[in-house]
Image (cartoon, rainbow, N blue to C red):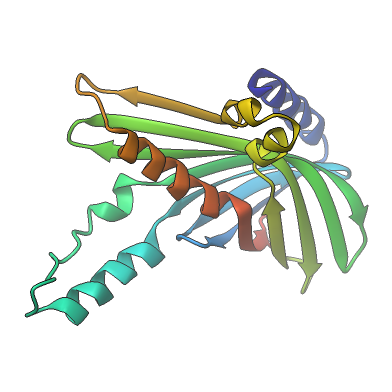
Length: 204
């Protein structure tokens, strides 16, 4: 399935290269804020984004001040945390509806979560079908709402034993990580891949 996703993405990139226009924007999801960019042709498009856990970081700051001076006092979150767990995503899509004011896109989306810790580097990947809506505010600006259904949820409905095929987990370290850490990374990756709000500016 992952190889098929890569092949389809490459096909869309090649098909989108003819008479394509580029775009750049801001992406917001449940966990953070990041940058997004890509290309679109008349019928197809590809994009990619990197999101940092801004919201959870701010939550850590709020918790620090709330519990300061109590028995549950926490440490002030280091700014390094913002770049320790980036969420990187890419998608290829077909423009089902494309008119001057509204667009509907159907595609495949791959999300990759990286965790850079002292013990090494961990990687979690999820993928699934994507549906996005575009509202054109002007010729050069639009708002995009994108939803993704993790393939694991679909596979789980078919067979409980298939759900784990929807995740890819890799760890580059000489030390073993606990099951809790692995589960934390998986749970951290899913929300950011389900719902995304984007603002796109056409470059050319």
